[in-house]
Amino acid sequence: MKIGKTEIADTFAEAFEMWGARIIITADSKQWARAAAASMTGFATSVIRCKLEAAVECEIRKEDTPDNRPGVSVLLFTMSGKTIAGQLIDRIGQCVMTCPTTAAYNGIESDKTVSVGGKLRFFGDGYQISKVLCGRRIWRIPIMEGEFLIEDTFGIQPAVGGGNLIILGTSKYSALQAATAASSAMREVAGVFLPFPQGVVGSGSKIGSRYKAMIASTNDMYCPTLRSIANNGVLPDNVEAVYEIVVDGLNEEAVKEAMRRGMHAAARKGIIMITAGNYGGKLGKYKFSLHEIINGTVS
Amino acid sequence: MTTLLSLHSQPDVPLEADTISPDAITGLSELGIEHLQVLHGNIKARVGDFFKVTGKGVSDICLEGDLSKVKMIGASMSVGSITVEGNVGMHVGIGMSGGQILVKGDASDWVGPEMTGGRIIVKGNAGHMVGSAFRGQAVGITGGEIFIHGDAKNEIGNSMRRGLIVIGGDAGDFTGVNMRAGTIIVMGKMGIRTGAGMIRGTVACFEDAPMLPSFEYSCKYQPLFLRLYLIRLQKNGFENKIEDRHLNGKYRRFSGDGIELNRGEILLYLR
Image (tube, rainbow over all chains, first blue to last red; front, side):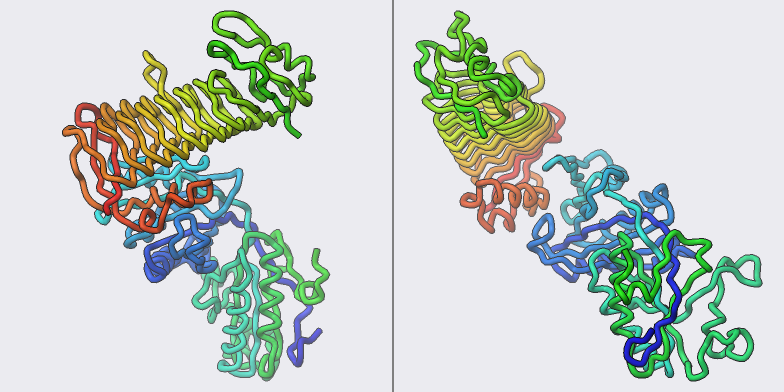
């Protein structure tokens, strides 16, 4: 199958079940909301070493935020529903509460919730105040600039992590241009985020290593410099650079739609092939066939 | 579909009609509703002695006529709605835990005593003791919302523990007296001795107000939480009373009552 002259490999992306939360950060200005979101989503590219994946989902117009101030939506995923509360507490406490003029609201209505504001309130040292509005408890924590507002609980839900595309280009320039375009297109989809810098991975990994201490190591099959040593013929002759895009989402449909848009945006002159990473279907719960996504035949 | 109750005979003395509630009439026939008991003074009477009932009992009730002498409408209601086309007497919504009561005219004293949930909306004015504890009780309302679009008299939210009371007009004296927690927002003027004896809770007002000496000034600031309340109230019938300056302006914060825990707050909009 081809899009233009770009081959779409007959393979699938293998993705995993994760747990997700959405945090709505608001602030007096867009700049402060962005600053808090950037701080909160730092060092959050991969569960391999960061223990979570997080990124900005989108910016929110002030008319659409709970307090009518400029907002940013952040998605934060962990491998387990048990660890997500700790990550939310740490990151909102250290990165959002410390950022001037901000407030943090829950962005997911779910039966499953974790206490976040209910724990961070103790920072108020007994001077915190709770308010219940429309059935939602909000904590007012007195801070040096005034008050920090945070919801008592945040909804969490099963989510999908590890959707991916691998883009094979004839040069670093063409491959990166295509990956950047794909990244931009994929981020337009609501409910997904791309956890790596600008959404693009320059050093994709495979599971395991010859070194016992390493749980992941370089994806040697796609390293052009290892063409004659370790590629096993996977890398076409004229491919000089490969980039990966990892996409996480709140549900399968969002991830698949992001992958579909990403393939269409990346396919172009200079891109030999778009493929995807998997583990033979043995590890992940989800298998996203590239052909089925392009054909729109995925249920 | 609604159950319509039209007042055909004005009671000579206050009528206690705690059976006029969705919980009590749902599923009853017209005759069944007419046979529900009410108290005319200290004399047992029936709903049908005073009201013409149209339609079988459903969870949405409409009441017509001047009900100024009819007390306890919506007592203990947990679901559904009651619309009172005119005025209503004392104790409307007593013990209510859910649903909504809309009074298009004025309400008498004791709106929503012992309320734990639901919402009461009074388009006109209300009497004394809106959302207050009964005399001798330590705790007032523990939940729900009371929206008075006009004025209300003394002791709004006396001893309230949770919930929201909004007064679109002026408030009398002793607003938030003995308040345990919860929120009172007054968009007009307040009388004297606001927050006397309050332990926790918030009284916010769009106008300046005389402060008791046991309340101490803390600061001028923009309370973000209040913005959340006001945004919501703008969407619930108070859009003409809440201006951008109330959302974006500063409020003076007073802490008190110093004779109690001192964790209550009075927020006065700074012009």
